[in-house]
Image 1 (cartoon, one colour):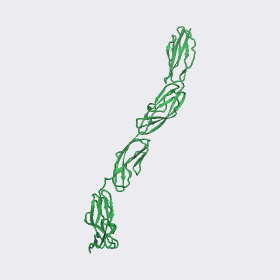
Image 2 (cartoon, helix red, strand yellow):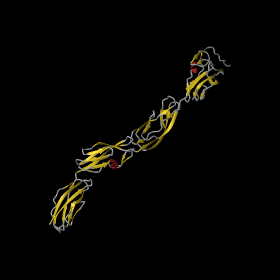
Image 3 (cartoon, one colour):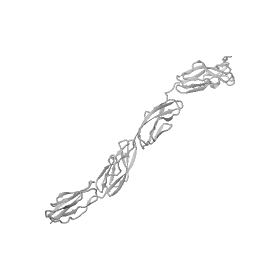
Image 4 (cartoon, helix red, strand yellow):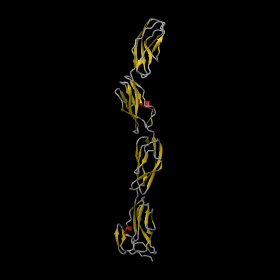
Length: 379
């Protein structure tokens, strides 16, 4: 037997008619259909009033216009993703276990609002990174409604040392140089979107040479450039320099050029700590060893008298300095004698008597220069 819809009495609730309690038909809650949004998942359940008919019930749409993208299951679940905005009015027929059908006492109404843009990852790219330099970047997504975003890596490989948190933050300290491509996915509970990114990790600042700088000499002008001494590589030029510790009076540092300069006041071994930074903000410290030698000095002596035809030998001795070389800068030695430039020894067989005056100049490998005037008598 087929039910005939009877509209005995109704009340207006949110623009739809609800049946009077106790009468056959759908529950009041069935008619309170939520508003849907284009592109967003939708869910609602209709239910025939308990105590009427012969459960279980089956449901089907029998008239009107049903929202495109939605479907009604046989157990009363309206689900799907709306594809077009509008207000849709339709009837649902229930068929119970006794074969009796009914359509309730009012149509169903579902309103679908226009949808916003779909969920998408809008970060254009990720910044590059550097080994041993802290990294931080936040991924951004938009559209897809108001659900909270949850991020994850779904393909490829992040640079070793970096992680992606569920709120979209890439962070960590890269440990290995290279180019890394990976895919991230953002999910808002109802939809998801993915995008691939590439991060290039460059090597960190590296010193390829020993941190031992050329020796200096007391009260002798000195200059040494870090880029040449240390063999700086890696990082992101241009490099910047700064003194940290160990610089005594007389030794300065030119931060713009990365140059140690000055004129040391005392001999000894200095340990100078400097910082080398790059355009990415990385900084690496290194301690340099600078040996300061005693000032070059000629030991005072009186050259002993020589004799014509008799072998002569004398030595001009120096202290301090490094790698000295001897030369006659003014005057001349007696005929038959020579000065060894590597040892400072004057030797030979004098060939003529007389008094000979000359100047011995010693120049060392650090640029220091000293001179002494001598007179040598040959009889």
